View 1 (cartoon, rainbow, N blue to C red):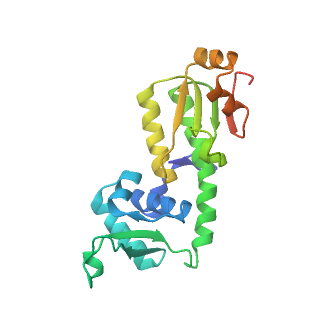
View 2 (cartoon, rainbow, N blue to C red):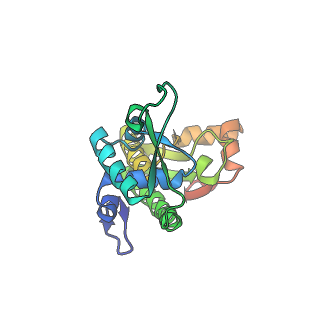
View 3 (spheres, rainbow, N blue to C red):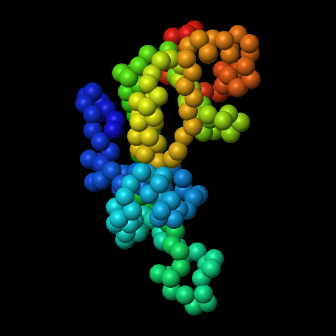
Length: 207
């Protein structure tokens, strides 16, 4: 769910017809080099198996997603139905680049919405996107949050964000006191974040 320019909120499924379809599109378009099995997709986008199968059928018929078959363990001459199917985005689809561009812009709004949601749920004094959001494979976390927020509330917001974003993320929540202590002793993990590339959304600590 993301806010529109008028400040009202709309859900991705309102734009794409269903939550499952919107999340599948995000996953495929933002990870064009990857292919997924059906049950893997249900886990990644947190959707029911039948719903995923239905939307995959629609996307394959549209031509945006291609269906392939694995050969491991298949008998000679096995039909496609007898082999294990997996799915990937069709980069030759005429609107693929346009859709990828649109989803990249939507990710910016999703990030802003996540920050707004967490500020409503607790006291956030520092928030930064790092890791995969800035293509830093050397950092073992994608989001750093400093403040006091209920872990269960945070988890729910992150799960929603992951689903809309189309991939899993790692996040770190630190109380203010722990953050300041780690900074004082030059904790390696924290210094790797503060000293590297990141996108800071909230900074009330003056760091």
